[in-house]
Image 1: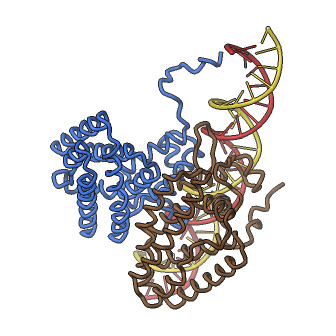
Image 2 (image 1 turned 135 degrees about the vertical axis):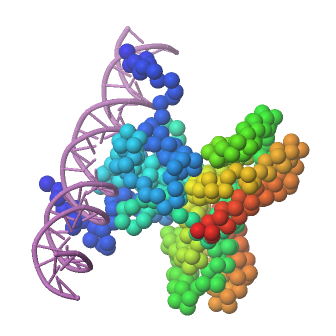
Image 3 (image 1 turned 180 degrees about the horizontal axis):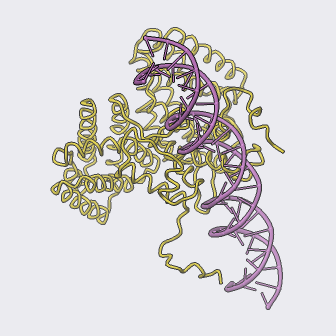
Length: 224
Length: 224
DNA sequence: ACGCTCAGAATATGATCAAATTACCGCATG
DNA sequence: CATGCGGTAATTTGATCATATTCTGAGCGT
């Protein structure tokens, strides 16, 4: 009887609660309402997400380890507020890693990969044209993560994930303030390089994309 | 019966249990007996470290997020076994970040910093001369971490921490197998560069150190 | 071999304890 | 009399634990 006893509307493969909390929180950090400097409390999340204490604690620990949340002395956890200096450090690492991932993806991208990326980029363009900030953030993230997956370099890919988590909230406020028009989009260039299997061009396009994005955040934050 | 919660950690400022467990586990991964491929269980640690379940869970999650532990499908957690490909990825990031930290440290190192580093390096030499593998690992790690602290770039420094956690177990087995004689030590060169405030020489020395270390692990692992 | 059951380990809950911030109140003072 | 201050009470939040529940894999019987 326990073989199918759980068929009560259970469509997907059962994910652990801490995993669900982690993903939810992660999405909120990247695309949601969690602004830099904002406090995150365990008990607030347990009531908000209707989850137990332990899963929430674990999700928070995990995000702290990834740099997405910061521990402020007295047991207080906040979304980090980035300084220009922080941006420079993130920039340095992104410049070292993401072009490399682009190069590797160049050699490995299948036709399906390329059309999937093209489809994401189309959605991205639509979001930009429509001034849809949330859509821009989501699709841009999807594009880069998909590209990183293609590169088959899990250590580098996870590393980049954690970098994005760090600057995500800042990118969001900056984008929200200035709109989607001025945003970087070297994706067309990247797609052409992938199709031509030209690793150098792909890397150069990625450098441009990273550079524009980081400089955008950097100068916007220095206005504060 | 057990109400001694306040007179327990008398060593220093009352650290939370999960923090103590984390550091213990981290030290075991870097310097202890946790070999690549070895399984790590929650219940094993609760009895071993005489800690509760929740702190152990949190420490493990944190280490997993840092890449020091790996989740193997069915709720099983192990110390990762690195492939040559993994080493290459770690190498790439270390090459991008650690020389930069050395450069920054060059500009910021005080006299006390330099003598502290020199003292650590002396202990390191003693460990190498005495064939003390554990001492080598500990002092080498201390040297680099101290240098990274001087550089005052917390994001880069934390990143390097997590990279060391990844290759720590492999470095340990390789060092244990081949002894301390053949190990890299560009530290003298680094110290001289710091004293002369020559950022380029410091960066070059660090590149050499990283290169030797990673190549050492790489070729030793490919023998397996 | 196949399926079932059971032991053991991981996951999750809620209670309980400790710490810290906030709220509040009386007192002294201008 | 209003106002600021110090200290204590109350509330909020984090940390830990004991325990219940769920899941996995192995052993056993058919």
